[in-house]
Length: 293
Image (tube, rainbow, N blue to C red; front, side):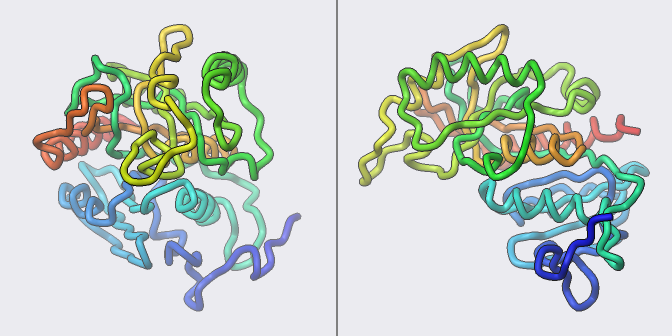
């Protein structure tokens, strides 16, 4: 039986997990993640009851019930470096006996639901629309530090992506791919538009934005927007989805990423009502979450 020493599994003096500052009983089996700490309240304000409110650094967690279903909402901050912390610590809370520092014999699979904002890379995806990420392709490199295996669908999609886009784009790092949890897509997003989401390690040059600094990856937006495979195409940029999918799949959890499109990079538009758009997505996802058993 593997033992996790204090240097690898770091706990606070009260026994809570190091960064999230949570105890196992303070987390639900269905977890909604948001990037912005202020957005946690925008979800939990709909809860019937709130059991726990915990904050450490950018990680804010509210756990309570919505229409009788126990939920947790947690802010991850921006980027897959934070996703590495959040997903591993959530998994440790449910699948490691923290007192004895050993893996539990019975493992728990969490439902991890991202509600985030994003920019479209297709002209016909208008601002204020919603879509879910069928796949996340990561340009950040996180999952190369883990020993992972792609399923057949991921492998073929990625193979075509590399044959097409990598011939035209000099990526600084080899991308990776991960897919949404099939059960969550079927139950929560059966009528949503679906696409391939590109997860980037930054907001400006990594997403092809040019301000005062010159960029080294030319025509990134154009090359990505031209890719399609089967009935899916690259639809949007953001900064967490591929990491969430990759770690969720590796650790045995289900994950799905809902995206509120606030910008269209082709038409150069930005939403005139970003708060209202995000709020509408929150309300819709909460309605759907009650369908989970």
